Length: 234
Image (tube, rainbow, N blue to C red; front, side, top):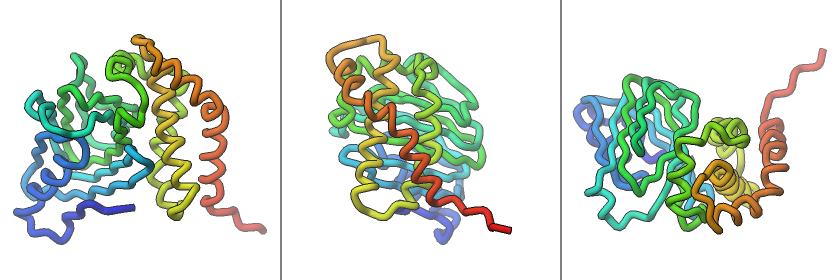
């Protein structure tokens, strides 16, 4: 794990500014605000080329991306997030959803959004570059309101929930690299399975991830099982 920021030892008056600076550049550029004196711990893992896992624990914050941010030279990305605690509201692509704790949030970071978190919160997200995701912007946008209807949704949600602990348990090497590639494949298949704007990219995504969809769940569970404590024998 790479800890990007931990404000524990910062002076009270510097904490909110440090949080805003770290989050505003952790993915696609956005405007970030936070209550004075906010504590936070931000961690980031590089999973694979064009894929990162971001984990944040804060006392609450606001993030918004507008047309002004879209004119920057940021890489085109998506975010698949999972709020774990706090009071959460997301406004994106003409939808507004509140208190989506424990549910996946797909965000096309090439378009505006607003994300509001009140109170102590834990959030995590996989950030993927479009060029590695291999799906069109139109395909991703069409999947956003339909994500929960995918048969892959429960698998993807559990995968993202468990990902920080699994990544921490692995040492750098081939297994970690394969896990990063598997994560990209799962997100790609999840989106492609419900995209209404079908094109060559979505058809190719389903074909490329067929074997993965049959095996990844068992492989990740096996990795987790290796790190679970064994019951003591009587």
